[in-house]
Length: 290
Image (cartoon, rainbow, N blue to C red; front, side, top):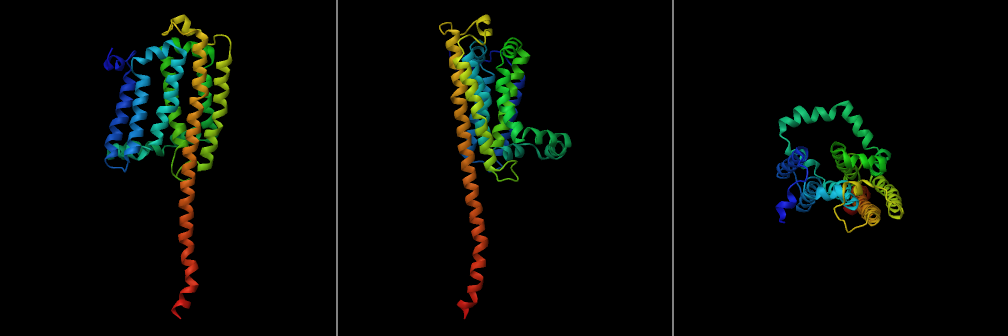
């Protein structure tokens, strides 16, 4: 089996191809005009490629037939991929990649629309952002919901896309390097919301890990990809993936938000010192002249 075998999608999806290709083209076009460092470009491409691999390759077969592989998929869709895309802060490049006429006729009026502004105010509210980020994980891991999502391909794709979109919104909010305003949250509040998302993930991961019976029998019913792995062991590995790597991604996000806070605080102090310096030198200038 070669690389092309693994790149062949298990269940082809035009939506994934169009979405990923559109993001790639816009970013590539915009990066030539916007100032995007090589590190930020590498971060964006890594996140985008990670999302594509988790959504549209042969690995999807294993994501559908093993619980711990499913958790690995959602770790990429909800945490890793969106995290690196948001860390690249690609908004300016993506906007620059849109043709100017399209921005004037379509994008700008849409962003000024009252319904769009209201929706963004809701999803970027810090309380709503945390509830959505953690709540979606809990919702899709409810045993009856998970059973149906793994059987119905339409619900399965809704589940995966909901994780991608919510991950992008959450990490975009947390990793915004700008001061507030124009950022929606101050650096301190960004740290608070990402820290608030850690305990619920630990609790759910521990609950899945320590449960002595099978919570998700759908994988046994449909056939497991790894027959040598027992259902309980599979469940324990999945719980650990939610418990440890998922929480560590949040810790990493908090550290980046803290770094932005320190950088912005230092910059503000330098500005204050520059404003105060002329005032201190003003009265002494005549004395020196005298």
